[in-house]
Image (cartoon, rainbow, N blue to C red):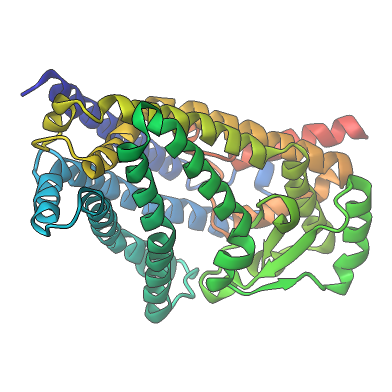
Length: 417
């Protein structure tokens, strides 16, 4: 066994064990605090609601542990188990050109991987969410969503993969720079058209017309310079009882989207505070920050791909007999996250800092009590845990935990009074 193979197996084992350990800590911590509502929430969260949040969190985390083990086994099956080599052999047997052989390898890997993840999505939707009263999805809708997502991935993905492989064979040693440039253009175009072309294939989006909100919202939009931007309500209730809101895209297609399930939970003041939070993301150029981060990471990925592409040891270390462009893409997509799992806490900390900043923006432009009320409603009605394990939070959470976030908002509100 080559040294690279040993390193790969060790890193896969370490990352899997760390994720299982963190999930175990999280389950134990949440369970240990199940019997008592945190002091800051005694007046707004009942013990029954708190326990529902704890039980829902534990159920999801148990599933996450099984999925972590499954994902590790799947990676081993693709690599040292010979799964990827088998796909390469079958593609070569078709007799099509080298470019389309490589495209076939990537597409086959993607489709099989997607199918292998389906049981977990089904269990999360039809067992866990059903048990806790959140699921509104029918089996027909679940299957339709999967098919539509698969078709969209093929429509955008096959030409993109074919283009990248064409660059590999046709543009010399600098192919990876050309390929990266085209890759980024495609990603930005997808982000730009997603709100108006892709997302409406799954949900209905209607302009926010609630008359009780109009005055508050118009005043907020004028104060923040967000006037003329689009605010929509999404019919999330046809799939789930969980509520949320988000800001997406940029330029003329930028929009703030409220789940209809969230608006049903909030007062006009609370909904306005949530909107201010989302506007904060826009004002702080958070989407641009994430695009910039993605550009740097993807450039490094293409540079690494260019280096390993002709290296026979790279393929042989992961169960592929000889260099093959499609196999190189797949191996990098599988192996890079394992090698980079140690950076996940840094990324999580960065996204949490962005959420804190958006909360601060909301407090400057709306009432801090309304923002607190909105978050309490979100945690209460989404059965979010108020007592997560600190290390689990540090590694996984892209948003600050409820107690820390609400404490931060209250301190900002006190400063403004």
